[in-house]
Image 1 (cartoon, rainbow, N blue to C red):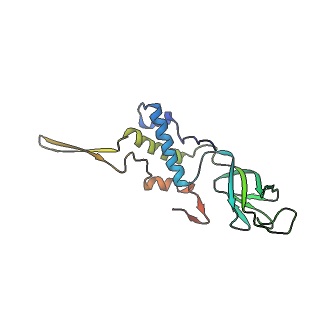
Image 2: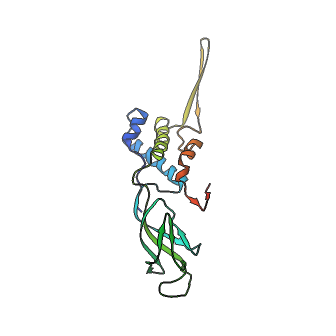
Length: 194
């Protein structure tokens, strides 16, 4: 699969930060922020056409496709045979008689792996995903050294301190970011992966 695009553009980042940003720095910050989001959600989020997933049969009745939302499935193969007797239901592939039965037989050999070619993802980046991406990227470009400054003033004496801040510009998701991205995070059954 080709490299996936960032969830926002350099122009978006310049508008959010209200400053001119070196295009290379903007592209790197946006690519990094997008990678952090994809890693946490375990989803590509952007539209991917004809992606190939190789899945092991764990449940006799259904196969759960790893990326969502699923737009379409163009091919399903088991043991180098193309199957036509399946139904797409949301992000699940269902098959009458189960996934271990070969076409035209009543035998159930272990198919090992099922290869599915499908199209998934959102046609446009959802607004909340773009917002998190821009937030992470803007922290990186406006505070690349991850520094925070504080100063104390007493009468005519002033002390200024600069120190690293773990939460600024670090490219890590805050709890608020995680809440915003939770609907996109891949789940297994009814339990969210942590």
